Amino acid sequence: MRLLLVEDNKVLADWLARTLRKQLYAVDWVENGADADFVLRTETYDLVLLDLALPRLGGHEVLRRLRERGNTTPVLVLTADNTTRSRVTELDHGADDYVAKPFEVDELEARIRVLLRRSAHVANPQIACGDLVFHGATREFTLTGKPLTLTPRERTVLEVLVMKAGSTVSKAALAQSLSSLEDGVSADAIEIYVHRLRKKLEGSDATIVTLRGLGYVLRPVHHGA
Image (cartoon, rainbow, N blue to C red; front, side):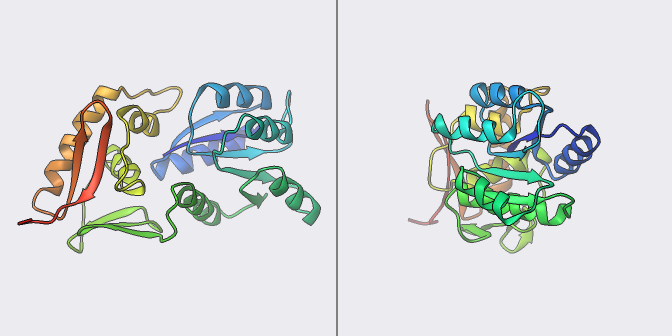
């Protein structure tokens, strides 16, 4: 999953970006609203973490422009202004959630997971596809009740597929979910991760199907059918 962090406090931004990357999110960081507005016009993200008190262009304006373009990317506002009026204003202007500084990182991560599930129209934190189960609270997988060992990139690819189980996900979308502005992933590299995942799912009730020219679909298998 690819996140954009918009925060002008460099110490906070560096700590938060490193923390989220340890949780296997691809994180891009920009420190002013003008740069945020630009990358949100040119790049695709699964979620935006947006400070409001930004130089060059305020977070309020970044949010307003984003929604005016019809962009529905979830936005989690980070701000020191925790008044009821401020919270209501940002939610009314298109924010999806609101966290006041200082915040506990565990709560922030939980709110990120909720927004990502909501964006994928997934209500249950536990998603099953055959005997493959994704545990949203820990972002871990089990297969036939046992932990499934995955590399970080394999886990990210499988997470995107399971969040959209039954729907086609393009190579480009999978590559985007793994990429940051500094570290790109080619669409062709996705074939390698999908191949490895198929090997790990062999014999199970879940499979990744290739729709040539379109992408991949994770769906259950009914053996003997």
